[in-house]
Length: 548
Image (cartoon, rainbow, N blue to C red; front, side, top):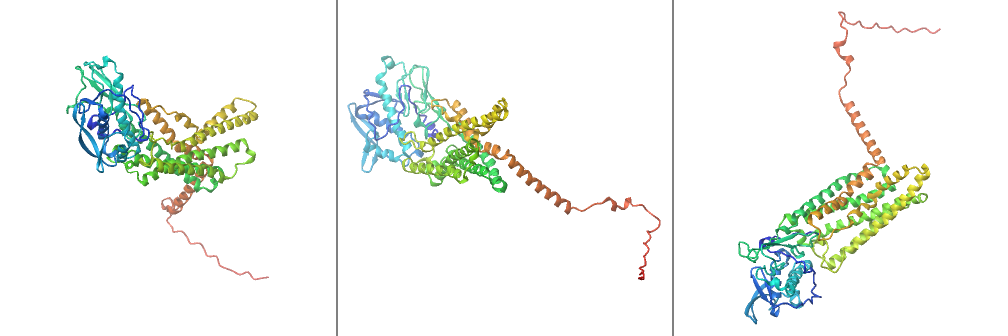
């Protein structure tokens, strides 16, 4: 999930949009059969500022060329060799842009599979090829929409319907600023929120020009970079806090033999998963995502082995967090609902916590490497028919539902037992609710809150609030769990307190024995003075008593 408006957008002052009547749909080369009826002429606004004939698909070929031309170099694997040839149409000879592959020249035509396979191969990955194809089809749709314009829309007082290289502007009244939604192919990846550019129609019914005499579409507001940079910094900080909090908790459980019991072994398994997720998430944010916006190049473009290992490590530990929460839930449910059976085998819970995670992520990684081997396996290619993210996301949803049922049943049993003990007073209800709230993060039920994902038509300001909250829930889980289930645990506090007392006691004793001693009785100033030296004690003669 890593989007950015390419710098080329602003240098060319051209961007993308789809008008309200133009649906945004991505066609694959295998199923490209969209050939609608078109008017005889359709306007290309950028640079040309005139209408192209649609005869022999001239308009389609030229507008598709401009889509390729506006694709930034870093989104291509190689540059096609462009050639200009003359086309003979009814209106006379006219220049057309083609590309050369081998000894043949080809049109930029997504409907021609033989030609288009070369174009797709030249793009950086399948996602970028799909975006280029989307742009080409949107130009055709813009031309097709002209058939439905009313006669009033063809008035010379209006700014004409035009395709500016990436976006379609409908007929617009004079002295009007048109708001144009930023389309998907303006970004690397799929944008998660809606932003808009602007195109102004002047008083004389012509589109405003820039200093170079080109029709201007202002797409500077389409940039998501400031949103993403803030979000990634916030995400990195939350995972760093969890990392700092979980490391001492793992050390404490491993250090004290008194804590090496089943309950703490299960906590340790969850802590290790949270530790791994926080570690790899920190690497993911600072080494993979942020360089997209702060550097000219990005590791995502290289799709190297090390960056894929970082993504797989984060995915593995992230799924392990969920499966370890499931193991903890089963263990607590067994203790409360069927206490006479005991906790069960520890190794069974460890297997539940890690084996499913390894299997799921292995299956996801193999599928991603075969079907969508691009951009370090980050995000999801919405243009792909393969919904690979479901391999790990559907089990998470299942775990969330199972944990909800387990917690509900535990709360019911706990409430029943407390009422039996205290005779149906109101305090057991409060105690049961308190215990349930205490267990929520262990069961992962806090993830119900950000489970709803706002649609991509949501404004970026509203989406920012949602993302901050969801990233806080996810990134600070390690911090919360470490505090609640380790640092606030009375057994842990007792062991740490005992160690502190022992360490401080040894330090105090060492300090007392190594310091010079002082006794006021040895101070000469407080001895009574005398004129005579002290007499020596008389010697006592040794006599032997004769035996009688």
